[in-house]
Length: 407
Image (cartoon, rainbow, N blue to C red):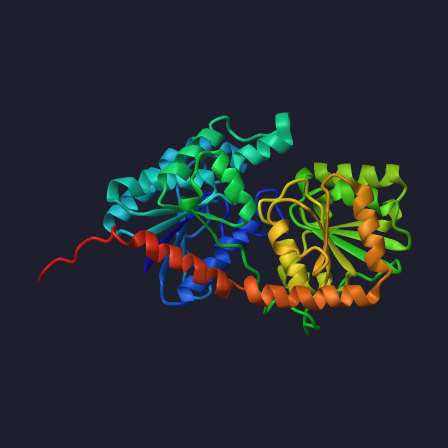
């Protein structure tokens, strides 16, 4: 199949850990690579955010990233990209008039908007993955939500008008129903994890993990943004003796002092009296992340809300048990009492209690780790994810294919 991926702000080429670079970038990159390896012709359309970027860049496996001129060729916060989506969509319409894809897969709501502009005149089926919903963000962030006011309305239109919504977890199906999107129009296909990269054991040639300074180590990682709940993990640490907390993500280590969220977390740690047991690592090379995860007794995922949450999967793939908040995708990925523990969001006491229980039981942690690896291999490999996505593509393409011309 000729497949067009539209990911307006989340380029598969971006360095992970920045404010707008996280799980969506990984999803688009890995899914595109897996589909290309199966023989599909995959092009990822993402916004040009630099003057020196080539027009097209190849990905491992044969997929191609095409940089779309829409807005200034420089970094722009994703919530400021909305005015540039008509130009993005017009570019897609011109390209697809010359070479029509058989299916378009849009990632995030603004990509869905651009994809509709480009696909509708050509009668091309569109599959939509939101990765996050505006209604959920508004519910949890309130006046701090910086999304354009039009977001929820456009998401409603996209969900009702596209050929299929690909939700990444069962919780999202319920949220979509509240937007008026029938569950019959939704297929659940989760995100995946690279089980060859994230795995138990030792990887020769990777940088060693930081030296442990306490008896136990907890690790939190991801984008350095407030909703990830690192402050909850820090507050929990005050009730967990002989334990250090490492936080990986954000800008390069030398730039952490200028990062507002890093400064906020350091102040919280100082006020809580645990600054000597909290280390902000900044951005970590993806090649070194598995070793860092394996160095931890537990990986914490404590966001107030999480559309999917790829970090618990990465930890489970490394056979490291997880303590995660009972929100969003965590409810699907983490087996409470099987691969880790689920705790209420915004409750440092519950986090601390779960962590203390697991740190006191080496055998339980070992069983959870083994079960986590098995769960990932059974459900969350990119091969399994691509199977599900490929099936949806073929379903929506039926009836949209152009008849072959008779010679």
